[in-house]
Length: 241
Ligand SMILES: NC(=O)c1ccc[n+]([C@@H]2O[C@H](COP(=O)([O-])OP(=O)(O)OC[C@H]3O[C@@H](n4cnc5c(N)ncnc54)[C@H](OP(=O)(O)O)[C@@H]3O)[C@@H](O)[C@H]2O)c1
Image (cartoon, rainbow, N blue to C red):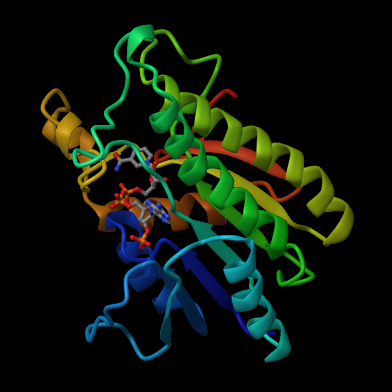
């Protein structure tokens, strides 16, 4: 059986690094992004699929295309995530009064709803044995680990993503053999998402996207597949829900 990988959000900082590293140990990598550019640096076994709007219809059309070509996916990494947008005036909330309808809707749309639509439809395209679906989550989405407060929309939407993954893992287990779902905290990674929040991060704790991609690949490969859903960090340690 071919070893096919799908990366959703392939133009993001972490997404680009994942595409390149998965290309080294996959037969083929499907890279989905909103961006239309093609990267001439891409290895030959990577195909780029531009999807401007990631809604049910567009996701369904793309995955039906794979299925009708007889392609099953062994590994999927959904990197889609959103934290701030200067143009839209959206920044992580510091206090209750900062909560806004527009920002909340955007956090849930990108961090929870888009990954949920992928997970919903992927169940029909994953390999019947040993499939792995990974979502880039964040430690701040852990309810038990929340001592600092703030960042209401980002925290809540990542906590909702975690719950969606945990819930979906029960059904994936029923429908696919030896399946595993993973919520992954990459640490603080030097990308546009973390840029405004890097100044208090020690240099050795600010990871490159390449290091992040290789840590993810290493740690996911050594997880216990008997456990159907995991929440782990960049060091392979369990994050409490
Ligand atoms: N960087 C960190 O320190 C850090 C820490 C903890 C968790 N994370 C998580 O890691 C993931 C990757 O983040 P990153 O650091 O690589 O940030 P990034 O460079 O900003 O990438 C964000 C990704 O989300 C996608 N995205 C953003 N808005 C979208 C929208 N409206 N519709 C569809 N896709 C959208 C982008 O896909 P396109 O390819 O289509 O542009 C891109 O792949 C995120 O889920 C983030 O929450 C990052």
